[in-house]
Image (tube, rainbow, N blue to C red; front, side):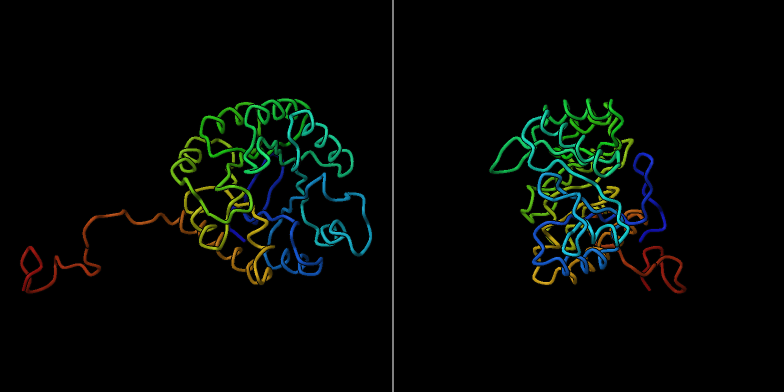
Length: 265
């Protein structure tokens, strides 16, 4: 998906689009959408999915057959202790150090509890987990999570499932400028242009679920998101032109035969 790979801890990925597994109308649509997205990493809620299921009607079977890297997450946890316990369970069942850490602080907004997230992150990093924490778009929290040893940081773009896009691009840009680990925008993306905007800010990747699964045509939206993430990454690497208040002629005037120094004939 990109000519520059993404490295998180000991893991390397080609796609910068991370996807989820919830809210799809059926398992076959989920399978086709994941394939269309070109993603390498799929996140799974430990508390909502049977990780040991092996039947044909299981999302875990789809993920294993697709050879995706499974990123277990602690969605639904409201305390640090609960998140730590859930992460340990995921490692035991899936035999992976990867964990997307979520500690929710408010049931209505689903905003993260940052102090509890910091507490859980410290414990999990010390236990050898590759921790990717979900948190507010707070540059100070990002630095503290990185200092604890998190392998990446995952600031929200907007509330989970809201589809509002990047509400505070300036904070995301500050986080990117100071981070020494990958920055993955997590939550709030609604459509392809939101993903492109996030990538143009310089983030390393985008994680989304509802934007694809909740679309009228999830498979087509997955293709759109794949293209948007790639386009946004390429635009960031290419370097956009400077914003100017006034127009600048596209065709050069200086040096044209028969013109004065101002380009007038």
